[in-house]
Image (tube, rainbow, N blue to C red; front, side):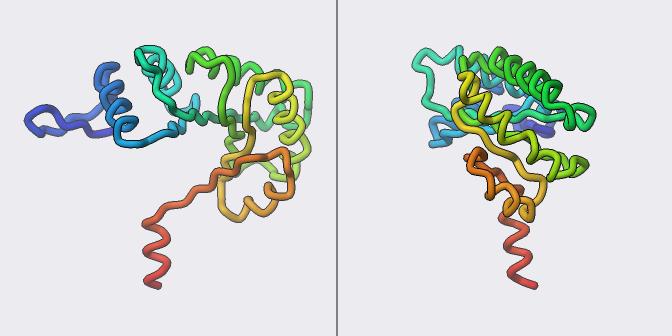
Length: 174
């Protein structure tokens, strides 16, 4: 959140504090939002969400999605990939205060070769499920064109695509 308005409507910059974050999340949940999408790359978002869910007396029924990355240096070494991913997800579980991640997505990076990713990702997701760290595994694609490649792998149960309704509206006018 870049701009926050105070009680009298003046905009200020910066992140909201814990109380403001909890109020925003409470308002979202009360308004029918049932899924929170986060990632460790989003600053302290996992910790804030974990604290919020832990603080709620009647823990809201919220589905949490988080993401992990694989470094280019590890991509060709399955053992390093597994260590990197498991370490990342254990930290996400700790921050989110969850025993397991309901929906876990690999955050695809445009700089990584999709073919190399697909050599390791299905196996990693299968291992994560088998070891009880995630319920559903998939990928957060970098571009909608990648979806076709990912759809060929049944281990990828969820695919998140970058899509903006404003882009669709503009495309329809052209």
